Length: 59
Image (cartoon, rainbow, N blue to C red; front, side, top):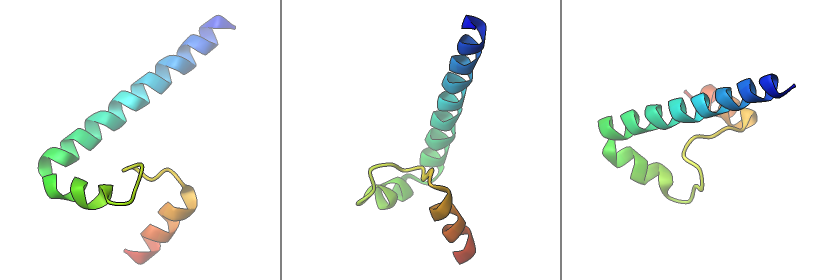
């Protein structure tokens, strides 16, 4: 049981590290975009599936 929990925790840490690396790379490429997105939003990466679906429709 502990091995499964350890693997789950490892996956969570790897995902968090990957997300951080991707956002840092994006920020280095587009420094002004972070300031624009940060206004009025507590989180920069939107995790709500419904909002992502609506955003994709607008593209």
